[in-house]
Image 1 (cartoon, rainbow, N blue to C red):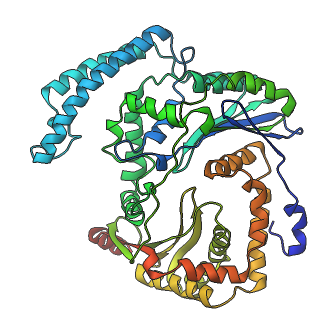
Image 2 (spheres, helix red, strand yellow):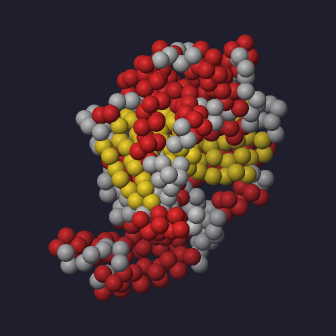
Image 3 (cartoon, rainbow, N blue to C red):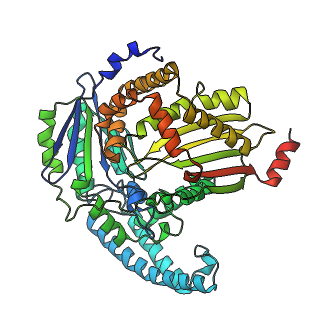
Length: 505
């Protein structure tokens, strides 16, 4: 239920998450939130590494690790740890020989002797021989594998919700366990950090490649949105997709993965988080026992130092796809924690939802669009504001674009009325409260904030939203929503698709 006035806000403003922070000698940060009325504990950890920490040639490797961290340890996931490791070494030897053939194939591609690296018919005879040899090793390893043992152990102990995700800025792992199974969580999670075994590494690359095909290449706008993103970010590593470029995914070697792991999965680059039924004094000795045994990394993870260059002119992208005509507009804005991120997020809510200005102006009043949106996305290293909408039948994406600019011009020149601004602030306050209703909700918030650079935002952001003024909204609208700072994507139906759609009416 939405709050109707500022008078309803004090109780929400007072909601503070009591986080105890501790750092182990090896650099691992620990965040603990006691909730004595719960019967479970939601636990997880965040590695401060995402696609922004990659480089050309190994794009997608952060996401690949999300998969690899479930493959087990010397005691989890295999019937014969010694033979398993021997097979992995043999596989790597064969893959190195295959990479030599792949280098020759890339040279042929540059000379125009082949047209596609991924076509089986373009592979050399030697490559096919090596592939057969490698497949025999894969089959031998499969005889030793205990599939999904990590998940089975958790579920047999009453755990639920085990999952993970990778973004531009972080990779996170989490699960909910009964309070009396917390030591199992400590052992399981510390083991896969201390002694991970990246078995089925090359097979898992293929799984990731298939994931890319399903999520990016199959949806009507998937590859278009990827191209627009690459055009929007000129210099920043946000320009490549989290899942990786298609030529990089099959080229990543296990040696590169080992180096990546040593750099970015060292304790000083991780944060362990627990939310639920426990006493901090009671669990800290176990945390130190299990996680303290992980050696500190030899070197700290490097910062992302490549900044986005200032855009000097409007960029436009036109795509024809099997989709309804629509427009997508991006403006460069600010990173997580920047003072302007708060008015930009408030401004996004002024524009969005069914009571927002875009819906009222474009969908209900002018009827130029069937839907419209606007929101601020503040990531760790940079940010963008995204607005767009779908054109109503008989209208064009260009008309929707013009209508969005008209609404933004109002925000540039006129103060948002106090009652409208307060309603949005109340929505933010209610949203902040809803995020604190369960162990997992709090855990995910801490993961997201810590992954972007400051877990304290879970307690500090609410007041910053409430402090936003109408003058702030007008200022950021004039600062960021300029023609030379935007990238515009116009999507229309393919001619054949448009004719079919018209014939079906």
